[in-house]
Each structure stands twice: as C-alpha cells, then as structure tokens.
View 1 (tube, one colour):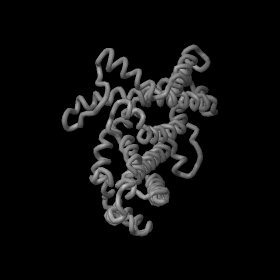
View 2 (view 1 turned 90 degrees about the vertical axis):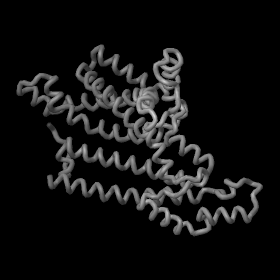
View 3 (view 1 turned 30 degrees about the vertical axis):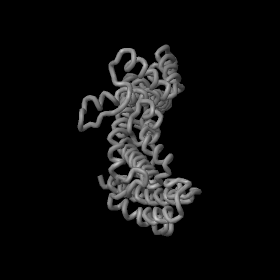
Length: 323
C-alpha cells in the first residue's frame, strides 16, 4: 500500500507540472498568432477608437505575461473567462458541451472495450485457425472505414430507413433523458467500432507474444490447460500495451469527435472549438484545448495507476511481471 501511495504521489506531481507547462505553451502559441482579435471581431470597417475600446475590454492592451497570469489565476478559481463572441462564461459553455462529448466518448470507449478485447482474446486462442483469420479481416475492415462514412451509413439505415433512432440533434438531459440517450446511440456506435477493431488487433498481438513466454509454459507443465493458463496468467500481462491504447483512444474520442458531431448535429465540445476558431474567440479556444489536455493527462494518469495495479513491479520500479 505504501509503495502504491508513493507511486501515485510521484505521478500527481508530474501531472501538476505537465498541466502548468501545457497551459503556458497553449497560451503563448495562440497569443503569437498574427492578426488582431478585436479588429477581426468588429470587422474591417470598424473605427480605431472602437477597436481600441474592445481591446481594453478584452484585456488585450496588457502584456502577454500579465494576461497569462490573470488567465492562470482564473483557472485555479474555476473561472475560464468570458467568450468574446458569445458573451457567456466559458465555464458555462464548456459544461453544456461536455454533457454531450463526455458521455459520447465514455460510451464509445466502453463499447469498443466490450467488443474489442473478447475478439482479440478469442483470436489469440485460435491463432492460425479460421476464426482468427476472420476476426483479423473484420478488424482490418473496421480500421479502414472512416468514422464519418460509417456514421452516414448508420443514419441511412437506422434513422432514415428503419426510423429506430433519431437522425441527429440533441435534447438536453434535463428535458428528456431517454431521448438524449437515444440521440447518442448511433454516434457511439460510429466511434466505437473502428476503435474496437484497433483494440482487437492490439490485444491479439500482445496475447500471442505472452503465450510464448516461459511462465505460460510453466503453467501448462503444472497441469493447466491452454485456456486456463491464458486467462489466469496471460491476459493480465497482455493488458499492459492494451491499457496504453485505451488511454490514447479516449484522448482521441474526447478531442476528435468533431466530424461525428457534425454528421449528427451534436452540440459537443468539438463543434464549440471549431466555431470559436472561426470567430477567433481565443479565450474559448485556449480554455477548451487546456481542458482537453487536462482530460488526456488525467486519463494517462489513470492508465499509469492501472499499470501499477496490473503489474506490481512497475510501482516498485522494476519491469514487467511474469505471472
């Protein structure tokens, strides 16, 4: 337990430093972009006095370092600022959009895990047989299919032809939870199946490698069947690279849903960032990107803890366990 607490404390310190560095990079990279946001917002026909007044209102007349520390201080207080274009608190905008994007990403990750891991395990157990070949062909097809194309097929089949699910749009959870959940079913499937194909291939490859290890042969020599040896000893060791892929997949799902959100007209975080970039609303862009980075870092922190839980030698500073 003490070793685990020490391991977690080191990771928490690393998370804090990473977030601080990420905040600085995001702020100053966006700050050096060419063009004047105030001039862009008011248009080319705006007077110099109007532009100067808006620059003062937005705090753009201060130095970059002053604006960075004001923004950073606001972050610690949970205040992400006010949207230039929508005149609303960025925290409120983000909270509304995360009600769509977060369940979408978590649902897609859960579904892809429930589909991909069993297929990968079964394929590894039947390596070289017909079942293995078919599973890997299907996985390759799933990887090759673009999300947006698959999403349109789902809309055509389940929304237009059979009318089982709504074709797009989103009703707030507070208005109709059931309809809100039904609105996310097709987007979740569209995002999950390609990711399930990736997980299946990674799980199969990792487990095939583990099956050649000495501790599996030792387990078989002690009287375990191949299936028992795989489930008792092999799967746990094969999960290490799979956990990494799952963490990266969640990062992709939470940050890369903009295409699927546009196909289904979902008011998610991806569409918010896209509209903020179009309006040059930098406060929204930098805050949204930082929240995405924070979520990715948090997920990778959880993956690190899962690593340490699966393999105790990792938290002790050693290598991978052999059983």
